[in-house]
Length: 326
Ligand code: GDP
Image 1 (cartoon, rainbow, N blue to C red):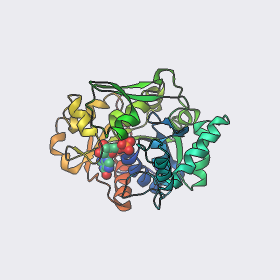
Image 2: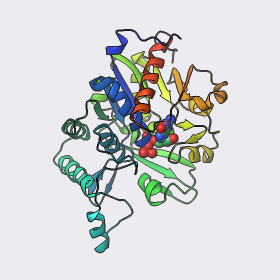
Image 3: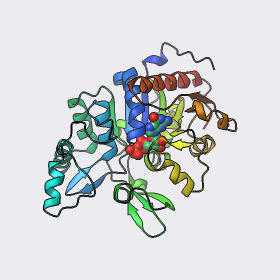
């Protein structure tokens, strides 16, 4: 692999499959490099109804991150947030296990109103993305309801109950995506994945089981990626065999999967042409039967996000012409 990019490849669209916090970091780097040529396809199986509101946690994390409004310390929600609503809710005995900041609340109220008025999640996301100044295009993978259900030894938990109320503590036996079999890929995602003008598909370093699998579960998505015939590159969410944040490593242990590069490659086998791994994981990647690119993948600031985006794009371009038959 030469690592050179061709002039024409640089003009093409890039489609990134993305969950929340980890994925959004790379999406920000990609947006800086690509601007409007970036199309981010986002998981919406974490969506839920709470206090009468439709909440889309991953979509909002991407929205706030790409618009520069996110709180970088906390890792979720908006910067410069206040919590008067939560305090007042507690006073009147309301449910307080899921925190909603005062500024953040506006997005949920407005989205809920527009959904009730008959607009689609896709249309609302596109409009709000434009209003908040995103240059990338933002696509919920589907407008149909999909809900992640986590099966533990004792009960079946709706995703936010598992993730927030139970702090990911219960062991996971299996994960299912209710409604996925009937979900239709949104028209915007279908159009973004059309082969003409498409440069590559990037799977962001999101949780493969909770953030990327529900995207891949939408019928037609895998086929659309396959027939596009462009390089498909995944970025491993493991750094030194550990998740940077969240339960990825814990889930791998619970599902009996070794937490290593080989397991991530196996998880995406048949879909990806190459895997970007952290330089610190290069030794353990010898057994991987796919092209790998070992670079620093820990994104701690804007510069490291842009650098990883550039590395991913160069790696994908270098794979061009050598994409495997999937
Ligand atoms: P969530 O839906 O908010 O949990 O976010 P994602 O599923 O998008 O991201 C969670 C994953 O991101 C975890 O597995 C982390 O290991 C991974 N992650 C977070 N930050 C980084 C980073 O800087 N580099 C890499 N390689 N992975 C990261």
